[in-house]
Image 1 (spheres, one colour):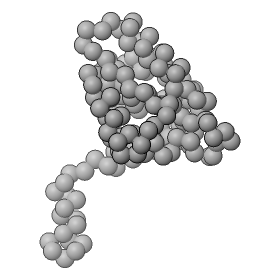
Image 2: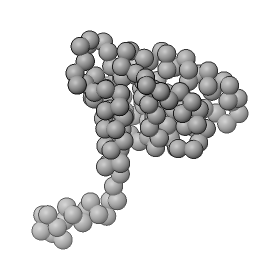
Image 3: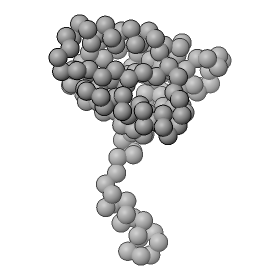
Image 4: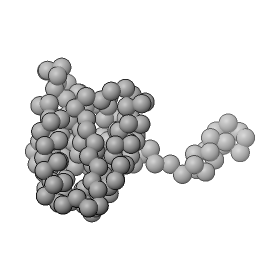
Length: 147
């Protein structure tokens, strides 16, 4: 469903242990260009939970452009995901197991989809783009007649 306001888009917060979220966002922006309303939060091992919660709350407010916020975390059950889940609601969705294909897909779909549609789309897209190289190469060789 298309947005009526060109400035409305789904905000993105990538949250991880250490620097994973920042590095993934940097690579995504290298590929697709600048991603407005998109921030990374990298939690350190010695940060108090209260500080992490405050950082995430402030970042959600900062990236919200009217269509809600999608939080991508590195690992379900980890501290970044557990803190993120405390913000889950009608305007905030959480997808765990973030990968680079998900961020790239979000760059192009967050204006034209609702929050729930985008969350489901990137979850499926991220799963579909996990590959076992030997299977991909085997299929490729069979289709070209070299295998």
